[in-house]
Structures are given as C-alpha cells and as structure tokens.
Image (tube, one colour):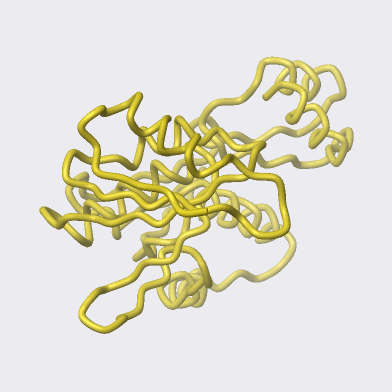
Length: 212
C-alpha cells in the first residue's frame, strides 16, 4: 500500500492543494506531503462526508469550513469519490462561481455502468458490479443488504490474479449465498477451482461451484 501511495504521490506539487479522501492515509505519504510543503486536505480532518441518518445509506452531508451541502447519493457512487469531488469544487469556489444546487442535481442523477447496475432478466433481478478490491466489495455488500434484505443472493464472480480474492469473497459471502466462479477472458486470473477452495475455507458448508 505504501509503494502504491508513493507512486501516486508523484502528481503532488509543492505549495499546491492535494486532496486525499480515503479515511486511512499511509504514514509515508503523510510525511512526503509535510516535507515537500504540499497543501494537503484530508477527509475527516479538513472536510467531512457523513450519513445524515445512519439507517439511510442514500442521504449524506458534506461540509468544509463554512460550507455544508446535503446529497441524495446513488448506491454506485463511493463516498470517498463524492467527498473528493466536493472538496475540489470547494477549492475552485475561491476563484470561480460554484452552484451547489446544480451539483446536488448532478449527483442525484449520477449513473455509472458496471457499478451496481441493475436490470431484469426473465424472473430475476441482476446487478452488475466491477468491485475488485476489499473496499469496493464492502460498499457492494452494504448496497446489496440495503436493496435486497433477506434475499438469497447468487454471485457469478471471477478475480484477476493480482486481486485479493479471499478478502473480497469473505466480505460478500452470506450463509444463504450461492456462488459460481468463472475464469476471466484475456487476462491472468485466479483459477475458478481455487476460488471455490477459498470460499470453502471461509464457510465449509457454502453452496458454490466453478465453471471452466
């Protein structure tokens, strides 16, 4: 994680704003910003995004200094993305006019293909989601629980070889879930039978199979 963070830190410039929206910041990156006099702005330190009602995952409030804005956040939009985008606009608002009411409308109508994308297929409802790391899978799990409470879920999944498949499966698996593991096309991936073994290591009673 530190190595990835330092690679991405190459875009940071001294005496320029740098916005970091993840809630956990690697110490090496924090030190890099301090040494190079980068104007670092961090979520939960300099700007904030929180659910208005802990029982409702769609209503959120962003705030920084004297600005507070409420949003109806689509399920497929990650909170960190919304927090960072708002902070960028807040910085620009010092030089340009920003219409927060227009931002609210854009966020409410936001759609992203492959992020909690829902459609009907015969008698089933299908959700497409490209979640491929633990953080994204945790968001996907929360959205599934919100929109399909007490429903039995069937997962069709494949993971690239460079992905933490075990953690992703652990976050998504429920006792009544059914899994079908598939190979990915045109890229190195975890073998479907290896993914099934991971599932069984989490829950040896799990209902799952693999396809070649």
